[in-house]
Image 1 (cartoon, rainbow, N blue to C red):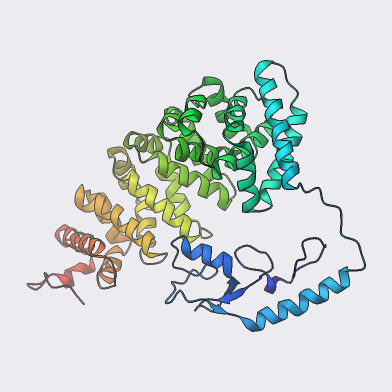
Image 2: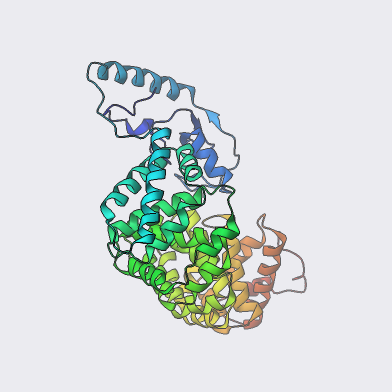
Length: 429
């Protein structure tokens, strides 16, 4: 049932809603939506508890084989193969593993020559990088093979070349290849590599910032993923240097606000911003670059997935842990209302992040502006409902604290007054 070699249009109802590829093993969730088994299993293994298509919370994670659809796909596939058998398949410029290994050796030689001699021709290196990237993209196994063939030798050579490149299309090829090697990193001399890879180099930093400012969207996404992968693989020294540059925060936030709502761009930026925010001093830099305003606008976006919403709320939770972040969030009634709106509407994780932000603002630091915005946004009713739901003990305690704050605020608009009695210590179940 392999149709890759033929130009055949696959019916939409035979495609997996996640991968958009022809389903090999269709299975249905309790919501009635059918997915390819490998795709939905990967989604569930990632910690998600919702149906990707409907965003409904799954009552059960059981996968039910859809034998009827599988038979229909088999009949259609056999028919399509019969119709295509008379015409020869189009030629493919795919590399074998032997050819990929040989090409990797040539690339290493070319990169070593670049280091020895200042002038170099980018055309040959660009072509070889493009072919290796295409080879690695064909399958996860190919990606691992490419990384193994490169060992720990090619990555430092590529990284050192980033600071010398002015042509953005060439820079994109280099960065994408670096990401392939970093994502499929094998057991190599990490400490030795760390000593040879230094993002603190001024030329390299300038090239990365320029790529984020001037490059097309694919290059900007690749650069953000590169920075995060460098942090994951080689920890603090690399990204801590670039995190000191305030321009990086503006560019990361611009990727969220001006990417025509590209999910890859937004997820890559949010993921790296969250990693940077693990260092407390970086949270103030995110806020200073306009982070709260951008994140509040993102929460209002209807097309945002549950996973992306969780990332936005997580980053707001981290921002609320610094003085500057609390001040900006409390000053933005739009942001507080957007957080309240996401309570119990997205996922368990999103609700927990939202409650934590509200608790931090209203209870831990006692900001009356935030409390008023929550009450005006019908947040009290949502907190009461959440308190009676099957939430975690920590969330239940934060909800109880929030209700006490709202009751003490004495707002006439608050429905919590009906909860104010001599038995208020009893949970309202």
